[in-house]
Length: 280
Ligand code: AMP
Ligand code: ZN
Ligand code: FE
Ligand code: FE
Image 1 (spheres, helix red, strand yellow):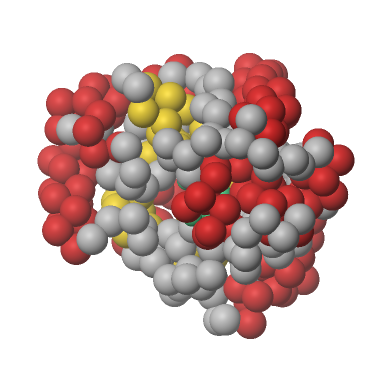
Image 2 (cartoon, helix red, strand yellow):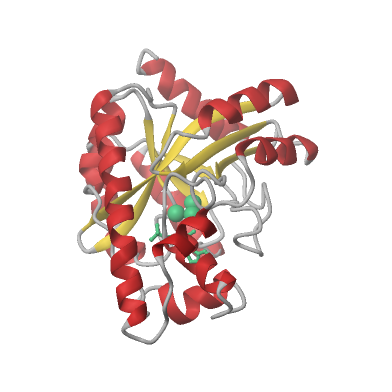
């Protein structure tokens, strides 16, 4: 069984359509794929149809943007009820914050002599419903300012760069509560990637486990072997499921292919068992 529980499509900042993503996963011999677009469920229906046609299993998921104790943290939510009103409202608010931040980013870039219009960003984003820095990066590439998304992040829109504007988001404990109430399984994405390690120590993770967290994404490109071993030990101790995923973004992140990191069949079975225990 090959199981990848973290991928993105063009509905957010990936470059494959949901159908292309599922077909690529089937062609690569994968059995289970979670579509976890940022702050939206818009890709689920198309991905579900493609998965049925291709004979693989789709796990409907979301990568929810959150903030906590001064860090931007991402939380994967597996199998939440997409019709749950508080969940819908939370996601709509995050997407609205993503939208209103684009002109702020463009103003910050303009102050540095880089002139990009909202129309250029919209064109670069194609049909995406969840807009983000990668789309501003793509507009910078299209305008010839930089040669790639990576270069755009390194120079203009990455952490601490002139065009980076933080986006408003719910706190991690609030997002856990909303996702649990919607019948979803919250798993922290790349907990020790970027700013996460400072905030998510043993004590904080124990607190979140108490608040309804179900798992930690241990196997992720942001973690080296030592971090994975430490996180796995913490997951064991707190009775959290240790998952894994590629964080595939199509050609948007050149060094990551589907199933570059995976979830073990045992961990997947543990997630299914948690779901059953929740009566879902
Ligand atoms: P945002 O959610 O709009 O703040 O943008 C964050 C997104 O940018 C995440 O999905 C990351 O995967 C993506 N990202 C971060 N760094 C890079 C990079 N160097 N190249 C491409 N994408 C990146
Ligand atoms: Zn992304
Ligand atoms: Fe993420
Ligand atoms: Fe991701």
